[in-house]
Image (tube, rainbow, N blue to C red; front, side, top):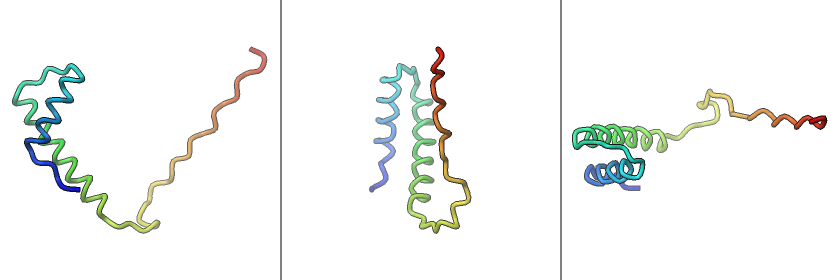
Length: 73
């Protein structure tokens, strides 16, 4: 997947802000776009890093069973 250009990221931030009814001025849009582009770069680097099962130290999330409803209610 190609990296989006900064004008594309800015357009995305503007469109998202409009949809979320967030009033962002031009300076705020630029800052949000810069951080979003940086975050995308970090995510791409991590996604392209091969990991063996032993490299993943975090335990796999297993949600607790949903409690049964009280039959007496």
